[in-house]
Length: 127
Image 1 (spheres, rainbow, N blue to C red):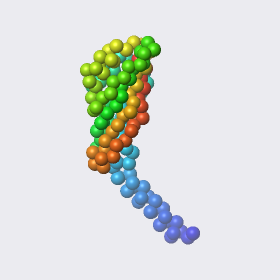
Image 2: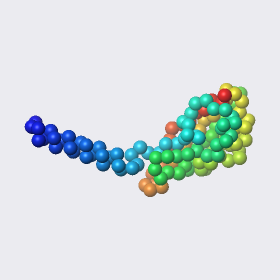
Image 3: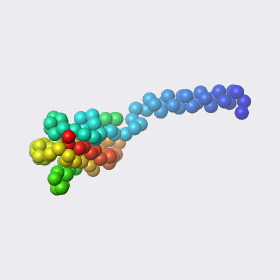
Image 4: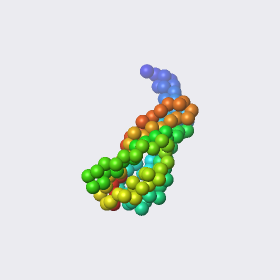
């Protein structure tokens, strides 16, 4: 391979990398709970949040399952948007330290392509 061919390959690589990075929506949706993807949280901090958020493009949350494992019992509520209903807020209010909170089966719609994504679960432990 001569220097001219090597130079052209290098220029093509740089140009294609630039075009790909400018395409806007390359990573897909990212769902968060108050900017978090899980970990430890207090009940008070959890009660301050009114909905899940999604970033990465023109997405909206279609539904999710909110579950709490509290004192050996599992309670689930299915939501039909990204918002936390009064039932979900009441369930959060009932948790005790050490309880596990699961946000699962998160379905996200890309408003442009109409494609539906199933996002990873979010797990919190109540402090």
